[in-house]
Structure formats: C-alpha cells, structure tokens
Length: 229
Image (tube, rainbow, N blue to C red; front, side, top):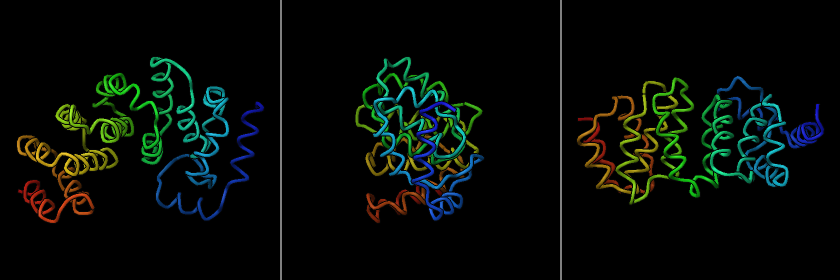
C-alpha cells in the first residue's frame, strides 16, 4: 500500500459513522462496500488533498463506495487540458455503479462550465451506451450544465436520443425534463408535444414536476395532461 492510499484510508476510517453507513446502504444500491463517510466530509477531504489531486486519483484504489466517489471529486482540482480531463472523467465514470456516484460528481463539477462544449461533444456520443450509469451521466450532465437559453433545444434532443428502458437512466431523463419545464416551460412544452418519450419516462416526469417548487399548480396540471394523454 502506497503512502497516499494509507493516509486517505486512515482519514476515511476516522471520519466513518455507523449511522451514515447504514443509511447509505439503504438508499444506494452498490456492489462496493460502504465505509460510512458523509458526502460533505468527502468533499472536504478532496479539498484538503487538492495539491495532490492527480496522485490521489491514480493511486487511490476503488475499493469502497467512498474511495470511488473521492476519485471523482479529486477531478475538480486536477490541472490538465481537456483531453486529459476527459480521459480521467471517462475512467471515473467507468467505475460508477450507482446513482450517487453520478449525481454527486456532477453537482460540483467545476469543469462542466469551463469545457461545456467539449464535454457535450463527448457525452453526445454515449447516448446508446450499454452502461446504464454512463447514460445517466449524459442525462445529468445535460441537466446540470446544458439547460440554458442558447442550447435548450439541443439539450432536449439529446435527452430524447438517450437509450431508455433502465430505471436509473429513465429517472435521470425525467428529472432533467422536469427541470427543463421549470426553467423553459414554453419551449419544453412545445418539444414534448412532438416527441414521445416512453410511458415510464412520461410518468416519472409528471411525478418530478408534481414535486417541483418551481412550477405553478396550473403548470403541473398542464404537464400531467400533456404527458398522460
């Protein structure tokens, strides 16, 4: 075991809490064992090791839920050009086996804006990946970084092109569509009139819109009528 791995594993052990481990095991389906470290604590640990980000990424073994996510969080501090960042991002995503690895990674991914077009080009090639979490990554990336006025139509078309049929992918598409309704209601409504997503995605989208605080009650009723017709 190398020094950096030993240091970080000791940190993870010290920060572990049994109640967090129990909770995460209930809400996250993963083949990786859980240590029991909270997401905020992992983000703080990543900041503490930001000066050795690339070393941590390449030398930290993916032997727990937390160590895999930590590798992803370290990418925020890697100093590299886009091509190398993409290679490392693709390597990280290949390790992901659950929704939390994807969602927590993108929610604070600093390069998502800086290299927005470049990442979009690469992700657009992965809409039919056999890996459900790669496809979820495409949907979540578009939701977090591409629901802007200048590219909303392109983003909606990307969401439509993602191969569906897997719960974790379908739910991410629905989540992105509900967010699109909240941010660009008229544009998204017009798009949905001419594009038929699967019954599962439409049902999930209605549910996500129903729970949204950013849509009016009338808009929620209209979305339900539109997607359940």
